[in-house]
Length: 350
Ligand code: HPA
Image (cartoon, rainbow, N blue to C red; front, side, top):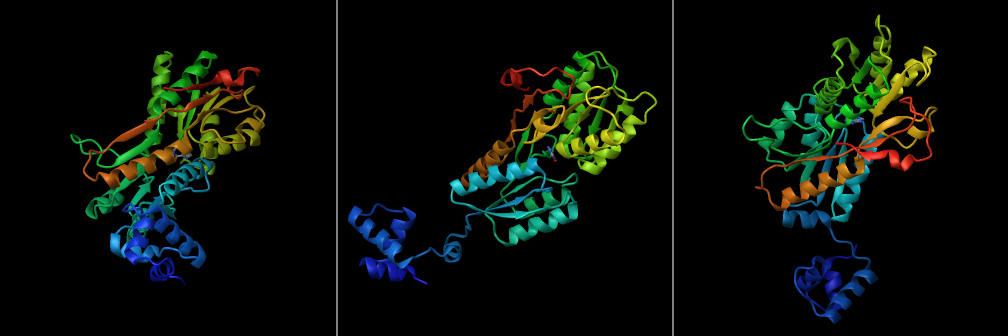
């Protein structure tokens, strides 16, 4: 394998000059630069990242720990993170904490042992061990999707980025109430996640704005997964006065809800209307087409990288929480008729 010394010899310059050309650390005469780049090309020289890391104490790598990587929402987040990282010359190490606090703590330590320069983590419902580890070891980190409260007075301790959850859920309730629904069920997510809490808050705001009472029997927790969503939907349908409309708080639970509705031969929106959180590429291939809140998943990933790189450049700046808006993908599972003006129905939600 060619070394930097081989490149220097072939180009007739010093090793230091090769380093300046490759790292852009000092201006070099154009003809010298050309000679170095030609030698690099000719010898097939590849910089040794490990050697560079020993000198700089940086690995130019980012650790990403998100659960449910197979969920299209998180897959798109991953795409956003990967694109942002590579654009800035960073590689990615990926771990799946499986939404389990002990596993989360373990994988974060593994990433830290590999000396990633910083981490992007979607925290579990009980992130105490995670937060303690990151603080103890002063790991530059950004929380993604789920926000974690900071100390009462000081705000969050970590940079955070998430999609708006409250306003969009309120908008779904307002939409269904506007169509005449009085019993709107919510298939809520895993308890303890900020997204779950905020979507329930948004649901309550929507009911209040429509002058509808809050009935806790109409909220069933689906654990943020398909099987849980199916069970929660079954529980709502078994009520003495079942809901006439359903809101599912994420894509996986939407699949579960649709399975339960199909098993019971209930049609959407004829027997029950359906609005869901999370759009996915095939949501408009269902019959009826699914009315959904689309989260800006790729942008969330890109923003997380931006925040982390800012943190690496300015370790002492105050932590920030960035919230990105969602878009209402208005289709027909809510009970509205098909129209040909689809783009006009896509509006940004508060
Ligand atoms: N958070 C927010 N949105 C989601 C999730 C989640 O955990 N899963 C699917 N959509």
